[in-house]
Length: 380
Ligand code: SF4
Image (cartoon, rainbow, N blue to C red):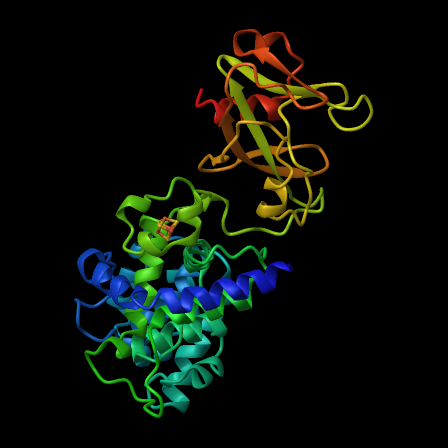
């Protein structure tokens, strides 16, 4: 099945199952929201000027660096009108150190346009915002949601990661962006047909809080490495967590060096022995020892890989280990899901395979990838 169809099916299932997600997310945000200089106290609508300024600055760098620059800017120019009256040179001087001076020029041009063309008030729609200098689709969506409660979900890198894990989006980035955008929007909760204006205080008017909740979740809990799933408000309903391979999302398009290949490896023990076989003399890792594996394919599907498990009497079910083993060969990166099983004494090895004592594995010609697989499978 093409990944996009699989992902869309998952989306449908998630839409049915994940009805509680928007509320859970907001409840978590109400308790754990980060204190940031541009965020107003809980329950208060954000100032569009501060949201816009922070979003433009955050395009450059992280929250820590931006904080002091933001404070300096708002102390000197407390509103967009003041910034629109400032000289470009002053703005560039204050910006020094943040890099990308074209953004500072656009920042100034935008303030001038808001002052001149909009009476000093930012437009309150994505469309209106996008017409201003330096405001692209993401920034327009962020300002519309956070400052005006518009029902739109800006998707940054943090949100991309959280959403791709929640829904186990198999399609790699950047192709998956439209799908991730669509899935992220489901976290805003159901829409109220025929009622475009958000009502203050209700869940529907909190699009900005939903977006900021996801941003905070991605930066503090659903981190690229070792996400703290136990603390996550969405953990009961997260597809990648249920599979145990959350760190492998978002999937990324393979680099030019070779497409990512995926497969399964089978770590089978018989008492203190391990099932191994010898690879064909020719080809990758020729003549070396390995545990049985499925084919390694770019479009490998977990089910198809499991079907290539060695035929062994006495294996009632395969146990899938959490996580995956990754390895980078010269021409392609590889991801292996590891399955384990133990079989009764005297179980015969399938054709082409043999049992070796685990204690003498160091005498086998095991390539690094297999060392990793065995360590993972045997919990060593
Ligand atoms: S359960 Fe874990 S992987 Fe899933 S969204 Fe939460 S932190 Fe991320």
